[in-house]
Length: 214
Image (tube, rainbow, N blue to C red; front, side, top):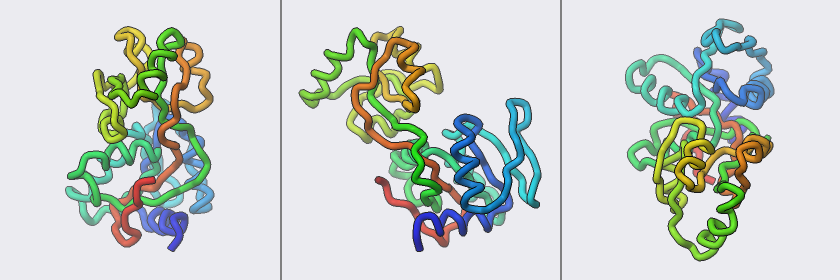
């Protein structure tokens, strides 16, 4: 069974669908291509909607995988699937005890962005040199488990405003880079792309099996 067929099967069997409340368009597009169903329009104030006989909920992308795992344990009869970024799934399964807790499959090959090593323009040359020397670089990041898995030290884990914290501490960062405009506006440059971000389906269902890391 192809990855897309696995994703389609899990989504078709779900009673509830969880969607990220950021970069929503990429996930909605992937969901609609796989299911043929329209997703209700979301806004900042509406976190839940019912359509197509399904309940849709919007939460942070980072919370989708752990929420589904918790639901599978506490409400085993409830069929829930969610779409999140591949990097958030990798952040969750980077902790060994979390592996094999979800059925996961690729929802789309369309890239959202990439998790990259970034640094201020002033420190970019020094960070690049340290990276080429294979030094263990300390970073600010919203992906602490993934960062350690990729061989970085984590000086500060944050839930947002990565560039602001990194700039304050005069440190490089691991962050999701899409167009590159945000890091540019904050005086940062991309040093090295590390991991592509694309939509994946995470499910409480087990028949499709677990997606391997890429």
